[in-house]
Image (cartoon, rainbow, N blue to C red; front, side, top):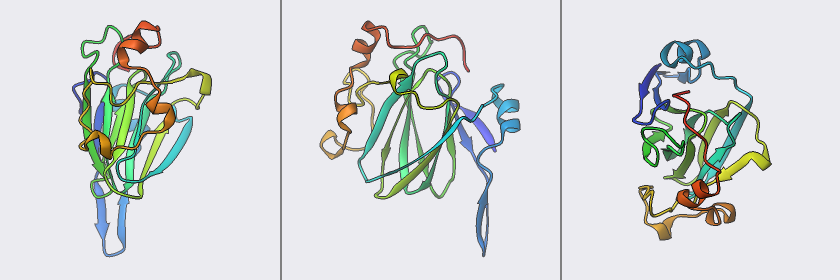
Amino acid sequence: MEFIPLGIPGAYRVSNVVHADDRGEFVEWFRIDKMHTATGYRFPVSQANLSRSAKGVVRGIHFADVPPGQAKLVTCLSGAIRDVVVDIRVGSPTFGTWEAVDLDSASRDAVLLPVGVGHAFVAKDDNTLVAYLVSDVYTPHAEHGIHPLDSDLAIDFGFTPDQLLLSPKDQQAPTMADAQAAGLLPVFHGEG
């Protein structure tokens, strides 16, 4: 298990080792001790989520009020996704930027997102299954979104806009500029 820093402070690609033989495979995709040693962060798992998506489905850009916020550890169990970390933390040195990491069921890699960043992904295959651990429980009144096709962000999901399917909630989400003007964005306090 190797934690590879992304360009957004506090975000990491987690490169996992797949142990395969004629019986199948085994992957250790979460270890609190290794995460703490590599990142300094203790990840208090409070909830685990699964989502199944058709090809072209976009989920996000989602974020939660800080505090407490939600750190996430995301992996793709079947199919493939483009996972996107968006730095929406006012005052961050990378504010307004995004980074994409392609995850699939062959590599079994994961992405670690710190509290306060925005998160989105697009399914690159039909019947894509994604698992993510989160550091705090879902609280509807504290959850927010930014429109994933915000032209100022210009996220490359790897599809043309007409090939993407967004939920009604994500279609109605504000742009990042509007979310900032409304005071919804978290403030950067360091990496984790």
